[in-house]
Length: 199
Figure 1 (cartoon, rainbow, N blue to C red):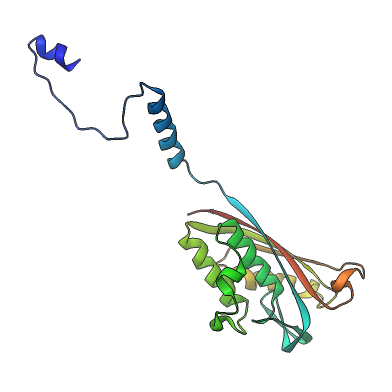
Figure 2 (figure 1 turned 180 degrees about the vertical axis):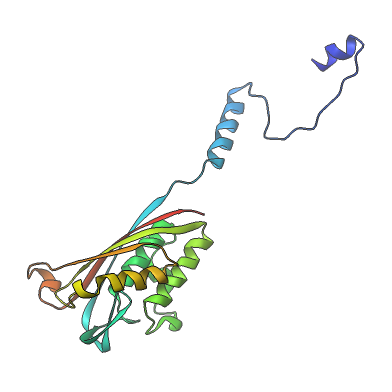
C-alpha cells in the first residue's frame, strides 16, 4: 500500500504504533492474538478448602477461633492448637495457590510456636496479598462437643474478621451425635471455605 502511494507521487507518512497492534493474517497470528487476550483477562475469584484437627491434651487454657476459653482443656499442637484458625489458613493458602499450612508455618518456624490465631491469620493475609489476592470472605464450621460456641459465636467472628483485615467471617458449630473422636470429646475438627479475589 505504501509503495502505491509513493508511486502516485504522494509522501508516505508513518505513525508509531504498538507491537500488540498487529495484523491478523495467518493462523499463528490468530493464536498470538488469543494468547494476548487471555493474558489480560481479569483473574476470576478463587475458592479454597481447609481442614484441621487437634486433640485435647495441651497445656494451659483452650484457644479456639481466636478466643481464649477459660476452664476448658487446651488442645495440643505446635502453636496453640487453634483448629479453627488453622483451617482458615489452609483454605486461604489453597485458594491463592500457595500450598498449605505446613509449607509456611511448619515446626521449623519457632516464631509460631505457641502463637495464636492473629499471628497466623495476619501473616496469611500478607502471603495472599503478595500473591495478588485479597480475602473475600471465609466460612468455617467447628465440629466438637465442647466448648459450646453459641454464646460466643459473634465474638469469634469479630476476632477472626479483624485478624483477616476486616474480611467477613462466619462461624458455625455442630456436634457429631457421639460419633468419631469429636463425638467422644477427644478433640476438635474444623472445616473452612475461603474466597479470594484479585487485587
